Every structure is written in C-alpha cells, then in structure tokens.
Image 1 (cartoon, helix red, strand yellow):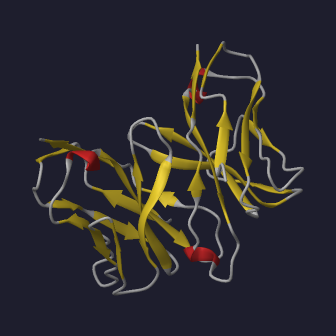
Image 2 (image 1 turned 120 degrees about the vertical axis):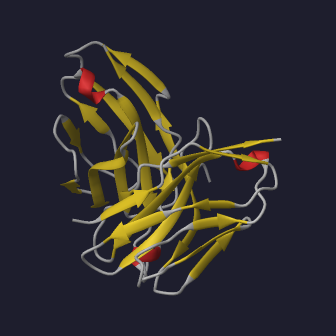
Length: 116
Length: 112
C-alpha cells in the first residue's frame, strides 16, 4: 500500500495562475479531506468528501474547488492563486467504520505551495 | 466553537529528560482526542488517541490521559530521545463531524 500520495511536493505560482493539487489513496477509504498548515495556526480544514460525488466545505474553503469522481482521488483546485494561499497543503483519508469518530486519519506527505 | 490549546514551543530538552506537552480543549459535544506527530518534511502520523473520559492512550513510550474534569489531554514521555524531535499536534473530533480540530502544534527539540 502506498497510503496517501500527493503531487507535486513543491510548487511556485504567480498571482492569478491556476493549478490542481493531486491526492490519491489506495486504502478504499470513504472519507477524504484537504487541510492547509500555516505557522502558528495548526491545520485548518478546506474541503472534505464523504464519498464519490459528495463534497462539502470546511473551515476555509474560499478560493478552492474540489470534486470526487472516484473513491481514490480527491484533487484540490486553485482557480486564481493569491499570496494568501501560500501554505503547506495536506490531504488525508480515513474509513467510515462502525466507530467513525475513533478512526485514524492517514495524511499524505504534503505539498508546499508558494504564490508570488 | 470547538478548539484546542497547546503550549507554545519550542520545547528544548536533553536526551533522557521527562517530557510534558500540555493540551486543553473546548468542545460542544463529546470529543475523541488525538495526538499527531510530524517529523521534518513529512505528513502527520497518529501517535495515540483516547475515546472517552479516563482512557489512556499510549504508543512508543508516549502517554496521554483523557481528563474530562479538566478538559485536558497532556502528552508525556518518561525519557525522550533525539529521534523524538518533531512537531506534536493535539486534536479533537466530535462524533458525526468530519473535521479534526487541531492545536497550533508544539515543536520538540531533543539534544544529545
């Protein structure tokens, strides 16, 4: 199992450019999430999905779009990058088992994005 | 709203010293509590968890006890190693909600 994979690892964009951060998991997990990590602020939820075709907004969704066409993939799109989106982005997945609240979230290695 | 407060770092210790990282929480529901660890250049890994009051989570020599009366989940280790140098995040999740609420993280630096 590769677990949760993310590409690219590093990216530099200019203001106004668009791009897609890729996330894939091979554990057949129903739930997937995107977080951003900023200094002094911990991790904040951007968007999440409870299954293919179902997505919802998290704490800081503005400027980001997501879709979930398959169980495995959950890409994050920046439509028009802004310097405020400079951050480290983490994708995570977990299984909706009988004790959903207790299930471990598995995190990818992260994408470090800089917007100039 | 739900929130997690951690002690600010960095915490600097010598090898074999005792470690405590404080974590307190505020939750509208009944949360599960987690400690995650992030090694340099890597994603977060679950270190330990506790699902109800008085539960003790433990892993790799680390322990934390779910204290409902003090709304705390402090992380402890009796003897730290250089390899424990990392950032530690306390987090909670309310049953039925997808969001993990994280603290700001505490960086631990262990010197030989």
